[in-house]
Image (cartoon, rainbow, N blue to C red; front, side, top):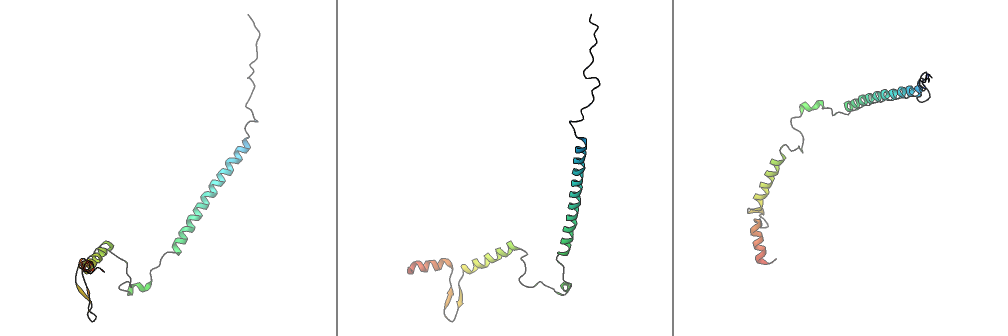
Length: 124
């Protein structure tokens, strides 16, 4: 039997100190944290600035508004689809009925279909 004792090559070996630069990693983490903190501070400052800008640019109600009963013309439409329906009904009534435009000169309004028939008959 061989009684020679071979020493373990790994025994007494510690970690390698030259592969990782601990101070560089620590400095990187510190700079990263400072950047994150400064971004938070800048975000907060921009938010406060935006709120201040919104406050000073807000529309202010005139103190004279309590004395005005109705808004001046032109007023905004309240019911645009109802207004359009009413306008179409008025225009349809004008386009399908007879009426005087100028009585002194004898100008009348004819329904569109009748006007088309007259133009077709006369060939104008």
